Length: 170
Image 1 (cartoon, rainbow, N blue to C red):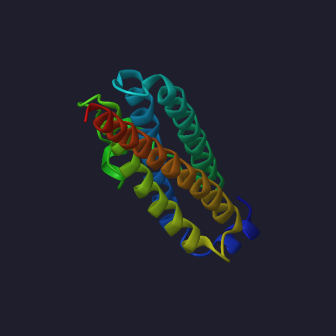
Image 2: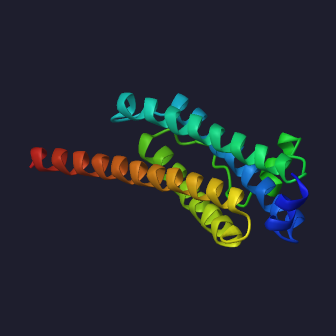
């Protein structure tokens, strides 16, 4: 990044790079959580939900690309070792040890809520200071909010389906 860009970004560029590396780690973990969850998931509506989880996974990978590029633009180095992802990320990876569709969705929902907090914080930190990072953070934040809504809707659909089945048994 050029002198003027660094000046606009502010004095805490190293702090910002650290936060972006945390976010980058979380994006890789989210990508894998979506991807592997979609692969092993079992239960009702699996065939409808699986392709959408793979779309979410692709979007998480795209977020990782945006964040890594921004780290480089700021003069930093993206986290290089996947072993560091779990250490740096504040949004934990949850292995889908129970592959039931609702459990996988709930795990992803917790991850999305954590990501929403991450990008809200980054957007607030950079608002009026680092316009490029701010725009990136708000773009990603918007997609994470959409993911949260998708997950909540699927969980609600499964709950409604379960309730309808109970009514039919009575």
